[in-house]
Image (cartoon, rainbow, N blue to C red):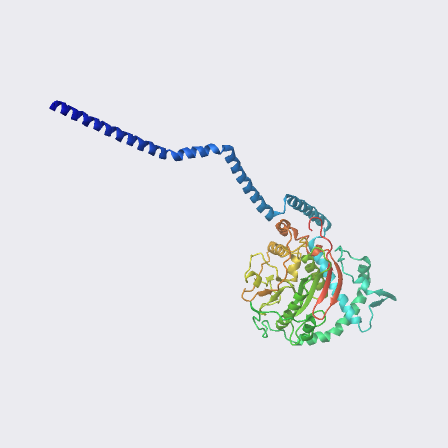
Length: 483
């Protein structure tokens, strides 16, 4: 019995342990199955996701991004270099027309620059000689010279050597014959004029020359916060009644050391012109200069050509008086310091070094625009300004390369003195940069035939106002490709 009980007890114990093992194994299996289901849940979902999106859609998505990027690049490109590709093609065609027009101008202007300078000097001397005779005959109110019982109109023989409208040079045969056959007669008449002017010249010789450094200079009279007065042209004329008709003045207590012509290219800026005259006349008088102001205005509403206006004013002013130097002055720049001398320099002087609009800094070394003072012989050496810059901008840079080509150094006063204020105005749209760059590239090669010697214009009127001489210039139409 004991054995049976023991065996029964052992069997029951073994059965119990077997049940526990099964339970533990089942629980462990259930746990493992549960963990396996949790572990495999996300990979199954990921596989389902990849199966839902075909590869072709992903490829199309990336192609769409590439197309959007390229379209943005094209938008930026067209905004910088043209509205569209057709406009770029139009510019290329105009550049080809520019080349053809420049070749035509080169063929038409076959006169060498040295011969043109000689004719220019002859023309200026004849014009001054004509003025001398006009002054002599003003008392008799006669413009005629009696010669061999024949009445000869003197104006017929003292016409300029070139026609301003076409700028074609010519010498009249009857004029040359008149001078050859009647040299003694002209010499006798001119001797009378010289004798009458000797007394006045002797009086001038008794006067001493003006000081090299004038004593009446005030220094800086404008600053960054200065405002401009609202004055009329009549008020300025009243205040400066000592200025002669045409805007000419010279000191009475001494002989001026410098004869200066101020040339102001002008168009639709009357308020600016009045402000400039208000400040410029007293500055030039305190500097004791023999000066005259010329305002060269382009008539009509055609394409603006600043260079032709300055070249035409140079030719006219040279025929009036023996100016030593010329100051080409923008109408919207007002000097702040009268120590910035407008007297004639040894080398071309760039005077507007520091402009308030440019934070009183020189933006680049080639800049000589704004206010430039240059001697007459230097201006003729480089043949003046190029006439090919239609529109606004770059004619001054072209002159810089011309001066550099003939080894004329640009000098500048200190930036603390050469200060200017720019009058507020609407900015003009500059000409297309491609055209300007093409012209600037050939500036040094072009100066022998493109410049004051080839300026084509028509001087429509000359009016001597109390404060300036007004020149009305018709510059015509631009050649093909330059508009």
